[in-house]
Length: 408
Image (cartoon, rainbow, N blue to C red):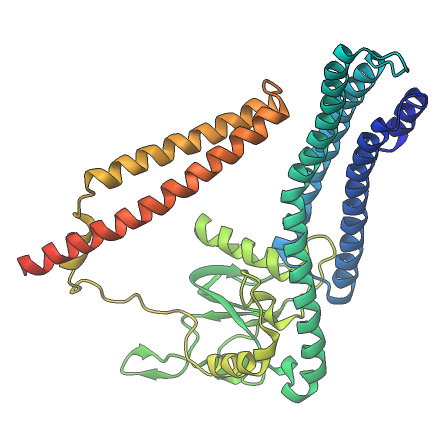
């Protein structure tokens, strides 16, 4: 663990040395403080998120995985920081012992003394740069999660404020539908039908139990009729069509492995794995890209209400047999010119160089000074090539488009 103990040891060793060394030690101390501040910030964020979990019985999956990733990155940072601090401390003390300041300093010794002082400062600055570099990734991830949490809190507050007005408890969100599923309730024979899953209930409709028929065809049911299945039990033969997610009654499903995997995945989101709490947040299933805009809450709810009034969960695949694919073939057969090909090769080579450079630094085979210098040059080269490649591609695209138009 990287802490201030090492700095105290350095301070004792260098207590009799000139004040020039204190600047270097202060630089190291500031780097360690930045690590401690990050750890404190991360701890506060975890506490904040745990509170949200207690309030809502759920948490967005990407926030959890983001926290795990930050924890891994930060653990690596602490390990590397402690390791490098040991080496930097040794270098500083080694150079410090070589200096002897007295009144009879020879002019020929000044250049050597100046060089040693510069080396000490270089080591301290390099360490500071390394810490900043190590923390850049977890700090960026931490900031993203903080933004998500802030947005989520505002969203939940607004949702709670308008909950009574919109009566969200009467609405159900359709999640998925699985046809041709064989289901067995306790003490009953297996039945084949369609399994509907919403955020509140499971609906199982045996395919041969509809009594409304038109010219031999089974009548399609609207979602409203499905929602009111409990009140309209006379509409169907049987009384086990609706199963609440909170019920402890066990059922057996028999269907393909692919469908079983999909159903299992859905339930992993509908329930929090260990506590088995039913998720009550209406928009937990809305989207997993987490770009929720709580200002448009009313629009979202209105859209959901209209969506619930639509018939079927399942959507028929579009008929694409008559689709004209000639334009697609023309696009796929466009040829890259020599300039684009060459730039792509150069870009790949530069990216490979950067990867090798990072690998060499992680393996401790190059010094920090060399690493930072070459890394910046390589990154700049990559940006330049990417800009040239994009321009060349646009030019090539226009040329191909003109050629295609002339052929037509």
